[in-house]
Length: 152
Image (cartoon, rainbow, N blue to C red):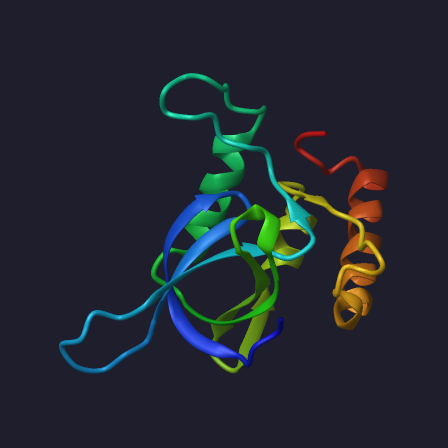
């Protein structure tokens, strides 16, 4: 279910495709947080702290790329869809505010080769985002062609 665009600041980078955004609020109230996984991306997975799973190749590098780019930066985001079977995990779009310009974070990650693109699956409620997914998918194909990817 899509919502409107919201403003916030990136508080935490959980992995190469997931961030925590805190709302831009005034006053002494504790600002709300939202955990957002970027739509259509799959980044290398970090292992669990207990050691039951190991890090995938380049997982830390992918996370560090995002962390250096996003932490403390103002952004605009929205939730594109929610997957109930994954515990109501929210997937969305995130844009960095660079003055008057906005930078699509998903495109930056793919262009740098730190994440793969998950192809759009028809019938899953993602039809409004097919055009964007097609563009990101085309960019991913170019990254593969130019051999800029970091992991597979």
